[in-house]
Length: 300
Ligand SMILES: Nc1ncnc2c1ncn2[C@@H]1O[C@H](COP(=O)(O)OP(=O)(O)OP(=O)(O)O)[C@@H](O)[C@H]1O
Ligand SMILES: [Mg+2]
Ligand SMILES: [Mg+2]
Image (cartoon, rainbow, N blue to C red):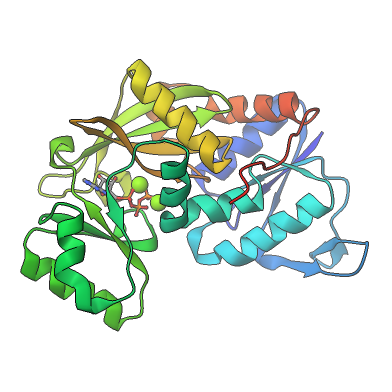
């Protein structure tokens, strides 16, 4: 097979590992920079032009789309879908999971537990919003943040109000969320492929930070999930239609709560702590699924 990794940077750890694994398993690997693609929209003949030539002969694609080029990256993935190329994640699923509001709605509808969350457009009701999620303290989150940037812990009504007003002033979309204090600055990243959790790590935030993101100085170590945590992670990935996913969970008094489902989960942290060749498992998943691709069935 010829398998493409959609990535803006061939030197990133995850991109390199995927290319290695594709070759090791006897396939041909190409890295396509989606930002440099031209999407040709023409009746009956979907085409992508890359480096001056139409892309042809690709059997499968592994999208690694950064948040900054999300809309365009997804247009490229959608075009590949129209060209009948197998993709590890559909464009719809990338968009759905990356929008924190939409994904919370879909997860809640599917019966996956999430922290209590509100979304509002009207700054007049700030007090009411804060109390609706049981705060303060409350978490205020930009809808499309990543790597922990755009997530604020407001410990008092005053802090929450001024943060909310600042975000409204910037016309940024955000949600207000119940703060799960019991998680003590830690979260769980479960790496899901298909119907299985391949590995999971607990990430503890740097001293003095409530955010556990590795990019913010957090540290990860391998853990064994409880049955309930495993079930929650798999259900969350399934609910959003993300077949290869990094599901972030908080351990709360009422059980595991899903914070988000990442459709381009990084491989470095999880491969390092687990010692598992996850890149190869992703390629093996493609080999297995390319025959029976069932499409995106989530519907919202
Ligand atoms: N409701 C919450 N209660 C307690 N801690 C939280 C809550 N929401 C987020 N956090 C902490 O903040 C971190 C960042 O939040 P979140 O994962 O939603 O943001 P992100 O910017 O999308 O990060 P990522 O890079 O994982 O996509 C979480 O990993 C967690 O440690
Ligand atoms: Mg995120
Ligand atoms: Mg996260």
